[in-house]
Length: 189
Image (cartoon, rainbow, N blue to C red; front, side):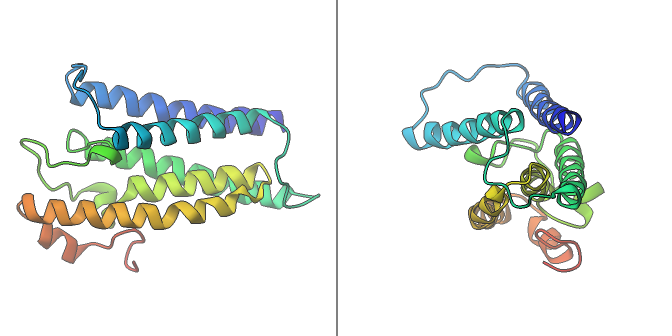
């Protein structure tokens, strides 16, 4: 069980480290010092709280266990977690400098439609990857908190739809890209 927890924690560290490294690279290392609105600070606070809670959970005893014999549940969880981690990391790498934080979505100067790699099939691989990662982590930890990921899904959908509207209005070629791809699941949704 300790190796499972180390694996889950290592994946979270790699995920966060990649995000921060690519974020700094795309912003040129410039720190933004402008005051942030309360709503933006709240969203960032919730993201940090979720991350810290998940990290703490990987080191804590089982919370709300699903099963007294969770071997296959853990196996399924690790597979889902790994798939989610890979999808989220590849999505972030493939998006490159055309990325902005979920709470500050915007069309960037010199931004172009990214339609290669995972983006050839779905418009939001990072969102999909992160949801899979969280669900898989909770299943790996044998926790009913896996159901909480279902509560995040409508929020992610709402954010994706708003983001798509903004991109369609401001980014040439995004409408055509939307016609050719699915939002979350290749060839289906």
